[in-house]
Length: 454
Figure (cartoon, rainbow, N blue to C red):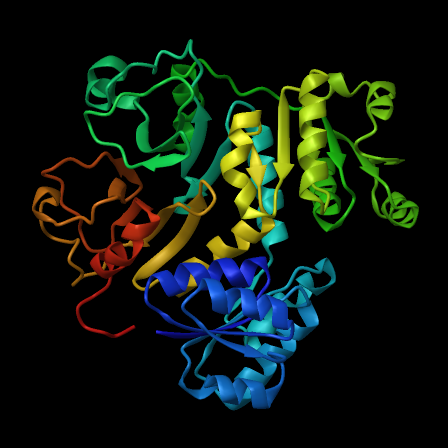
């Protein structure tokens, strides 16, 4: 598969890294020679210095022979023009564009139906706001997401010493917790991703990911001695696009919300735009301001400034002042392995969200969603079982699953099935799988049809 990536920033770099490691032919275009040099030195990709919206540059990159164009620069306008030129030169090339400005939201459908005929518009900030809302609804979770149109959830929980799960072997879950036991999909221990087997024990400090039906979420959380609690007060540090979108959603849920923003002009804009949200001008890391605003009475603190270090500092300060539920925006992926050691578990990343959205469009097979966890060292993949793929019509014990991959559950006619060795995946079943990074390529082959009609 030949893929052109326009933009060598964090999103472009991470996508190029993932795809090149899977032996896909990747070409990256960027005007910044330093960013291009970094990719050329680190990754096995072809690089071009220039504008991805320039038709000559696209021609030099081989757009006519390219299956997918990913326009992921920090400029919405450049991404739109790159897709427009690609559509004029090579209409059969699939186009994905990262577009973040909310002013473009009403035009997303037209971008797909009319020029530049963008196949998928990606706005990671919308996904981040949705993720934050889910984390707010499940205070004890470090990560939350949906599959099967919201009927199935994945949840990441940090195991405390007093958890009844600690010391339990997975093979004993059925006898101990009964039919409503959680389906353990992944264990993160000492920054290592473990694909669980029956003989694995759960340990205090593990970050475990489980799958359950949404209607059974509360009962499953009770097994962990966790409860869902209503959220009444939320503090948002950072009044940028994400902070604005989040406050607007929280207003609809009648949650009392305050935003602290350092830019006075932005404060004035937000004051005019928001209906109920209180806008405070000040430094989000000012402890005196926190005390004046009784930050300890807040149910949730969300730090979404564009500076990772500020977000980390403010989250730690809020925890120290008594805020139990903090959600921290982090853009730089190299920070992820360090954060749990200092007590920051709930992380949202626009760039990682963009990577996940793009990967589900690039993956072969009928992939419905592709969600990265633990930085990008593991992936949940939701897919439809296809008629002639190797995963269907045989007992699972006879299927050669790649090492580092696991079928977590099967959803058939609305019923969630815990797979066993004798289970058979039928064509049309929805599958939720988990794989560590090195196993994704082999898993992708398992999901694709033998006849190449994709």
